[in-house]
Amino acid sequence: MTSDLMARRRRLLGPNVPIFYDEPVEIVRGEGVWLWDAAGRRYLDCYNNTAHLGHCHPRVVRAIADQAAVLNTHSRYLHRGLLEYAEALTTRFGHGLSQMLMTCTGSEANDVALRMAQAATGKAGLIATDNTYHGNTTAVAYLSTRRPPIGGWPAHVRRVPAPDSLAPLGGSLAAQPQAFADGVARAIDELEAAGHGFAGIMLCPIFANEGTPGVGPGFLDPTVEVVRRAGGMILCDEVQPGFGRIGSHFWGHELLGFAPDVVTLGKPMGNGHPVAGLVARPEVMAAFREAFGYFNTFAGNPVSCAAAMATLQVIDDEGLMENAREVGAHALDLLRGLDHPLIADTRGFGLFFGIEFARDGQPDGDFCGRVVEAAKARGILLGRVGRAQHILKMRPPLPFAGAHAEMLAETLDAILREMPE
Ligand SMILES: Cc1ncc(COP(=O)(O)O)c(C=O)c1O
Image 1: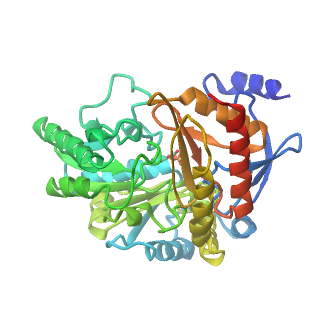
Image 2: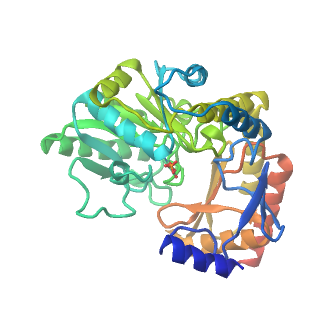
């Protein structure tokens, strides 16, 4: 059955289409923190951050269906839903981030943010870390080291050394914030010397795709200072930490304590409905709108706005950020109690956790992969991240309860006992 579907996928979609697990799962239904496969087997979802409120949350499903039954069109007509959502969203931000632009994907939001920085500064140069992912448009893919572009990386994009927990920049976790900022300063100097100038840096505030290596409040302070001194923009990619997942704050940049110029949003924004976007200060938004205009057929349509509005309301009505804080702290305690010689570090923010595996100080991606497969076999879905895919990545839907955290920790404990090395 699975092999039939895999063969059809290959025949119909072509090669190298990403898929999870040695033995892929056919998921047919979701509810809350649970997913079911075609054979009726239930899995505890500890990976999918897009289903932020839980899979198929009834209020979002109803909001989508109700609006779809009345009207769905595009943003070149007046529609109150777009404005009501813009008001509700922008009140969640400080730092003068009072205007919104909607897209359909995080990639598009980041693509717009890059062009916004260029429009606002009149410069071309862009910076990101050398171990990240911000999406799949051509411009955004230039920020990623994973898939070299045909013809090489363009000269106006620089990828600076990413923070790391096993081999921290500057030689220690304490030295890392300044060492990271020094790398950014060097890249800015190179961009200026090459005549591109410096438009902005794109960062996830908790460095989610880098594996959250030693990040915390104040981590980016030296970098922010360097960027400000050079007149560049800070483009904050909140696609992963945003909307209350980190428990202590609604946004990652609030936890770190800095003021971005542009914030991009995605995955959790519509609880699985494809809606994304960004917020910016009025002068930055105006620079972009005046330079490029912007129309996106599906972005900000009434159905997407209804999905996004219901998602925002449910986060508050069900106290999901508070749940992320409380259950996240309990889960982190349990995960930190796991004992295994290859565990190098266990860290987390709210309902976002990582367990890093290393052998003789070197990342052990192979071992981490075996843990993910073993967890799946026991009914728990996990993911991996990090330069060597050696960090277990856990980002369950926010209604995750204490009992789910205990099930996760007990399962990992049993797996690790069976896998001494
Ligand atoms: C940090 C970050 N930014 C942007 C994106 C791209 O979002 P999308 O897949 O919706 O285009 C991703 C996707 O994984 C991401 O992890």
